[in-house]
Image (cartoon, rainbow, N blue to C red; front, side):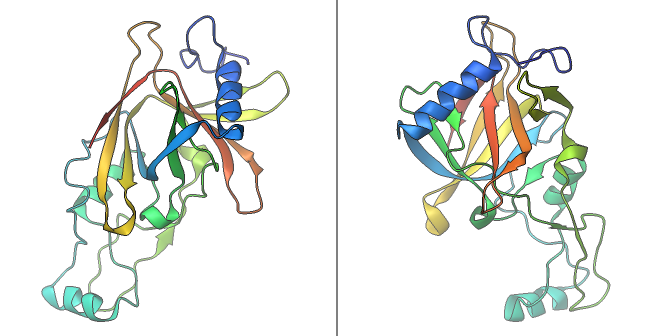
Length: 224
């Protein structure tokens, strides 16, 4: 794995990023992992804390709009204030657990895993839009991985990986629709000074549109 384009994402000197990813693939292949829940948001540097994300509510221009939406739910709701600030600051947002990929941890607790890949990012309501009349539909805008990545890595085999780092938090829905939300705090590894990063191959897509992706470097601490 080349390192000149995006230094600092490698794991300890005895493990290159490509070796770490191969270990993760082996763990998934052998079923040596435990599911945590559905990933909902990946928070990168310059982000606000995730406190308040589950309580955030759409920003309506008047109470009547909220009543119509609660009754019909046949149009898109505008972003909440929390979502607006987070989107502007480069969050990867799956909007709802049903859109998010399965997040797991290896049996040896050394790796966070995406055993079924990274699901495509859904289009999101334009965070800069606010409705003026009841029933107005928020226009949708795409979340482009390329515009949010901080860099790229070209592997020796020619594969191109998009790099997202440093990560600060990962939000996950635990226990299905009736479950709760938890967060995983991402930190710099004090042993090797690497940042927590997400590597995504945007071209390797399965029949469901999922991309191969890996969490590498840094350290992770769960807090539910």
